[in-house]
Amino acid sequence: LVLIDAGHGGHDPGAISPHGGMREKDITLSIARSIRDELVKSGRIRVALTRDTDRFLVLQDRYGIARKMKADLFISIHADSAENQTARGGSVYTLSEVASDREAQRLASRENKSDIINGVNLGGTNAEVSSILIDLTQRETMNVSANFAKLLMREAKPNLTLRGTAHRFASFIVLKAPDTPSVLFETGYLSNAEDAAFLSSGSGQRKVGQSVSSAVQAHFA
Ligand code: ZN
View 1: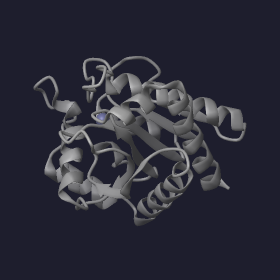
View 2 (view 1 turned 90 degrees about the horizontal axis):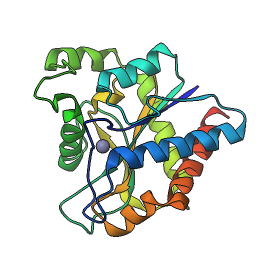
View 3 (view 1 turned 135 degrees about the vertical axis):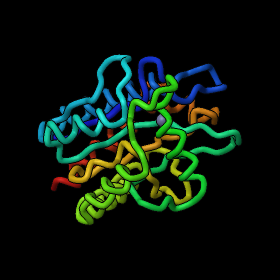
């Protein structure tokens, strides 16, 4: 069972593209549906979505659903934005206690803010809880996640633009389920004109869906 998580939703729009005003929450939902459709077509993988409508979910709920459903793989879908509009390309993140670089850290802190958007920390995470959760994360889960990230990059390479160092590590709350292999796929930059056009097009969304579907099938094979 693969659980696909469309990032953001409801009162949390995520990034907003300066090229046409597309909202990350809508793009992630369309891509999540495309991935689901491709996986269903394969006939070999069960698939579920954390949300199939425009609604808000706190980050803990997202991986909580994965654990409750005993998902074998959790894939969270996002689209990045940056001040530098030439920055483009997809990347895949897996959990690490220490972010691999400053930019990864910046992104993690921005994505993690989804839970404090109304001024109340709905996630209720503090350093202590976070560190206990990280300690509980089995090395095996992290290895499986990292291996899947590599497969995903391999399958995505012919279909979409990827960043130079496409597999990155960061402390995303949404990846902290201790026993569910999890990746966060930043599918591209909504701040970049080409990426925004690609990610909001039916053909671009289908290419992302096909890439994830092939990687999932290779993973379970
Ligand atoms: Zn996001």
